[in-house]
Image (spheres, rainbow, N blue to C red):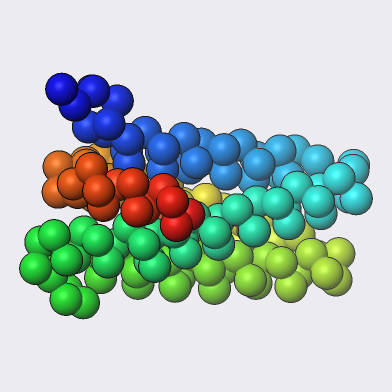
Length: 146
Ligand SMILES: [Fe+2]
């Protein structure tokens, strides 16, 4: 008997990681005016975590999904990869600004907006499809390689 936990483990794990990252970014924004040192540490943690999350998806999860569905560089994962590029570009820009003690509200709002829409699509659609498509062995390989 497969447990119900296993059936949506991708959705659960990656969604909670989104929440963790959202929380770190929110705490960075709350601290950036009065606690610069703490804010920089929070941003670094957020940035590092978001890049790692994207690597997990692009190097492990998406290829498994593409293979299971006979997709090669097409379909929903292609759109997600393009959005990752946009997200990482803004992330870099914010990080560069921070090095010069420069906080751009506009850039941070743009990143938040992108992440909101992107994460929603992954959580509502892509992760759910991954949970349906991946075998137990693939799921195990995913978590072992992460
Ligand atoms: Fe993503």
